[in-house]
Length: 397
Image 1 (spheres, rainbow, N blue to C red):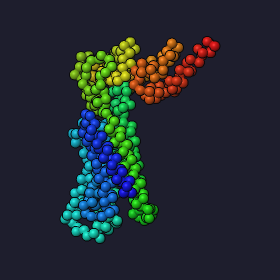
Image 2: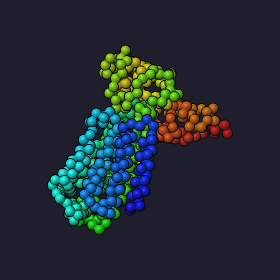
Image 3: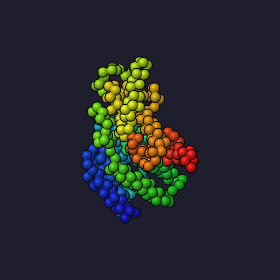
Image 4: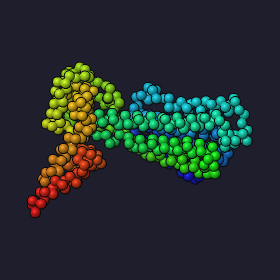
């Protein structure tokens, strides 16, 4: 196990190096680097404790173990809503880590004089107060991860109201990692309770412990790999190359954009529109879509369209949701699918690849093209094209 731990430490060190060498680093990148450092320290402490248990490595191992998931949660929250984290609205997620740190330091410095024998007993068979902290930490982490998964779902709903292309920013990978951590800690709680009551795993708890730790290490490797490549919505949409010449606007985060109104309120001064005003705005939107074909812009945003129509993003989103019964994301991609369908029906376009036609229709990638097209039509673009061309080929033959 020592060799595996040292290999893991080396890989984590490489991730830290690449993260810190990333251009345009944000606070989330430093938190991700900290997560890797903490996990590397945890692996090192596990080896050290097995070789020579003492007060220093026991305390550090406990604190590091408590700090791992809160650090991951801080990283995740910075990815979905950085402003609320920096405003200290969610710093309660480190509460149990702080409480345990205070307790263990006070215990070792003021309450108990540990000898090597009593320290070994503390490590092997912790007293009730330590069990309360350990099991309480599992419960705290489980509840925190469930809450975080709800935050990710909210974020993913919000970006669909603001952006027409969300693949690079929807954070499915972060949800998967959170689910792995959740499954790990839920399983760990059950396993250690069974072990503490001498029901199961009485002879092989260390093997189970190493397997559970291994899943945390692998999940963190994946988090670091994706985190190095990850860009926030604001970063991703800062690139203006190839954009339509719409009015300039200030980039907003998805969460801020949902609640922030623009200063351009020439036509509509309130967020609630009369049915007549909403119908008028909807018709103007349809003109932009059907005549100017603004959906052909791959990175089209609600903010841009609102600027064109001189309304707030809230008003425009309200209109789309009420009259189209869709989010901005689904509305725009529906038009893209319709545009691509016409191209696929045109025999003159058969010389072009489906990807080329998809890009011409406003899609941004092959993956999003295939997925969205099938969601709307029940067929892949190739299946649809074959179905459309089959009657023509029969006539020609």
